[in-house]
Length: 157
Image (tube, rainbow, N blue to C red; front, side, top):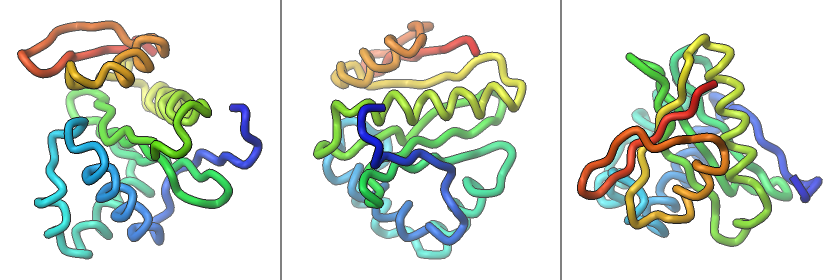
């Protein structure tokens, strides 16, 4: 990481409003990158955001990492472990892209997933999202399948 004012850490239970704002901003600025829609997410009750943040902050089968740049939350990545570890909601604000924040978010997530004992981390990326595909490929993800719109990736931990 080139910027000493960057901090990557697990979300705190009290940060549900930060999570909500980041998620809504990501959906608004990059609707083509996510399966969820801004119009649906904006209708979620605060209690839903609170419950999801509690799960991310305390759970052993889910997590969210936040990226702060100069104390401003400007990126995140999440993961659920059900039958397998699945990365989702990866997003970095366009104003700070190119600083290595995406790489650091995914690297921190990979370390956490490895500690859970999961052998692989899976992700899906829309075929039109070439920047995300390049990042994941650079971080060791290999293509394991695809559909007409998505590429499915896996990274051995």
